Amino acid sequence: MTAKSADKKPKYDYDAIVIGTGPGGEGAAMYLAKSGKSVAAIERYSSVGGGCTHWGTIPSKALRHSVSRLIEFNENPLFQMEEQVKNLTFSQILKHAAGVIRKQVRLRAGFYDRNMVKMHQGEANFIDNHHIQITQTDGSHYVISAETIVIACGSRPYRPPHVDFSHPRIYDSDTILSLQHDPRHIIIFGAGVIGCEYASIFRGLGVRVDLVNTRDRLLSFMDAEISDSLSYHFWNSGMTIRHGEEFSHIEGTDDGVILHLQSGKKMKADCFLFANGRTGNTDTLSLKNVGLEADSRGLLKVTKQYQTSIDNIYAVGDVIGYPSLASAAYDQGRLAGEAIVKGNLDGHLIADIPAGIYTIPEMSSVGKTEQELTAAKIPYEVGRAQFKHLARAQIANTNVGSLKLLFHRDTLEILGIHCFGERAAEIVHIGQAIMMQKNGGNNLNYFVHTTFNYPTMAEAYRVAALNGLNRLF
Figure (tube, helix red, strand yellow):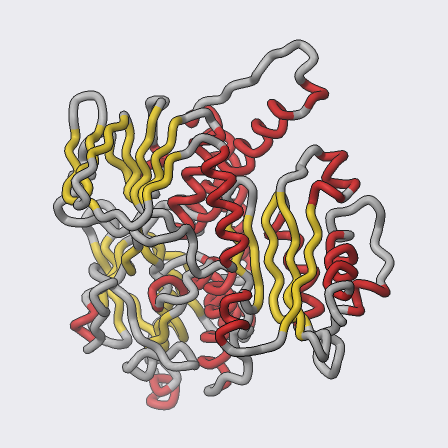
């Protein structure tokens, strides 16, 4: 080998290594690969997709869909002629979720194959800021290297050290997917997004649900009127909600669980789900070897370009905290890839990231809440459309819910969109598209002067816009 050819030997095995194959890792790996970079991806699990595909977004939403259709079947007069009520168990509907997961894995694995991203299965540990040791399931290990490394290892449910999660009736939001028995009564501690979604699922299956909230209202980051609608719907369905509570200890028994609250209350059920917080999966990465340190929640700090304090190491997704959404994580991965390829970052996450909460019924919002606009002293008005007045909702027998538009009184600029009801997470994007328009395009009159298909749920925008305009004087 000549000296000249020796100089051409690559300094590292790859241009980039991406740790994790969830939405953030996929976004980064695909952007880098399509930009001509040689990319390796490390996945600790047996198949790609990360927590989003295997334990989080996909399975929980598949469960929610099955239960929602079950409720729709049992409440539709068309199917009640023989006065039969169809029942499904949690384990039965898990089979549908498993099928969806398999389809997602095949789809996402194809992305890595087509873009020639080299997959490595095992646990990743930093040796230094360019070298990663991969430990396989049989205990063997090997080292790969790259110029740039992207941490996209996601998060897992927070587990307080004094809660016995080895007890067969105590679960977190990951292990609940392995539930074998059919509970008659479940206590869910934590009334955030995950807790509320699983409360909907179990109540829809006819399980008695006690929802314990550490705060004074459900989902307080949402518009108050929308979160109050969910609270009422939960209460009306027979669910018990306890606000402002903290647990003292959790006692596992032979046939269930007793929850002891700091207020002195005791609650008993045959199943317990702890759904209060998440932790970044950084504790196994040997971050100290590169001089990185995660905070108490396992999260890493990054710049606006998703760069950590180590120049060639980036981080995206749940591991950097807010907004901790699968949708945002994918975009963060692509943006980090852009910063790596171009050396700078022109793009950024949109300011108004939509929230979709897959309770039964769904909740979704984008933009400002009434409370935020009031605090900022912005003169706004409200336009509403009740789903029960829409022909499409009447046809589908999905009458619960409403669309709420917040707009500036003077300019008619749309400031916030809030929706509660079936398909809310889809409906909100129609309004989001108008909100994003520049140069006067964001205007309530768009909905007044647009002809919508009839009957559709989208027609709610015209109804709400007219309702809002009628409030002006």
